[in-house]
Length: 372
Image 1 (cartoon, rainbow, N blue to C red):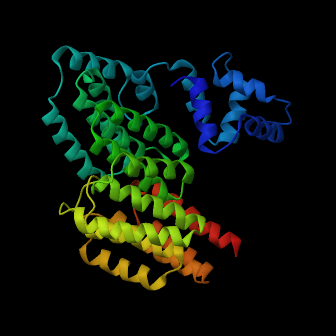
Image 2 (image 1 turned 180 degrees about the horizontal axis):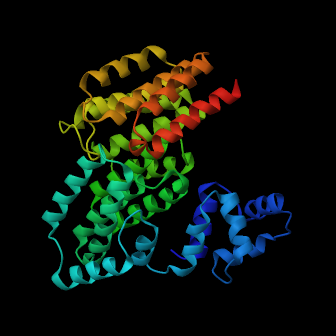
């Protein structure tokens, strides 16, 4: 992704026009930037200089290093090498990539085994640990994309990678989800196309982030296929959460009813994988949704059901439930108590286990506190 494409991606993720971006810069820095100049940046007719890079970094809330690095990155390989949280230099990634091309790399079956492993590890390891490994895998798989089935592998790896983006680079996750959806389309595998979009929808919807993008992914997934699947379940629940955040109770309840019917058909027996939705995880989806809607009885019932089946090896998800309880308390009027409950729950979890999702939940609760 070039500089122009990145600026456009970040602008659109906020729902801003080119004129709005120019206005935001002018307001913050006292400049007189014209909309036409933003258009020239996005079409790569001219690159912003150091001053405007700092302006863009501030108003788009993206680290300056990401923007500065994008000037020099022109390929998928170097983008991954430069932005990933990984103790590996670009030369190692290049070497691994060429080796994979020369030796043909892992088979489809071996890739599926790798995906299964990463799906399980994601549930218990920190984001940095997973990202460190997935970075190298993305470099390898891109050398094998003449095999259509490997586009499906690449799409699912990209989706997992998006989930590991640090909180300060949260807007970058949207770009990775879109890239994953494009890759899934190359696979011509409708199940992969639905799953990638559904996973993006529930991730963004649960986080209460980029609601418009989450809706688009959910609607695309539902349009591709109405065949019951975990991808469709994720899409439906993602749509339910975006509606709840917006205060659209009718749509949220309708999507929840549909999601529960889907779960009865496709719910997972696998308990500890990001590619699975067992009953405890579905209960977590319902817990937060009900807390957002102010349905205390449903929220408490879902929280109790989740705790009964939640594997002890996954303490991060117990923290989710405690934070849902904090949000529920805040929504019911005990704003200060709810915020304190959520902060205590997050503080009890080791920092390396914190995730962007938990930080966004905390921000949502604090917004409730600030509005009181």
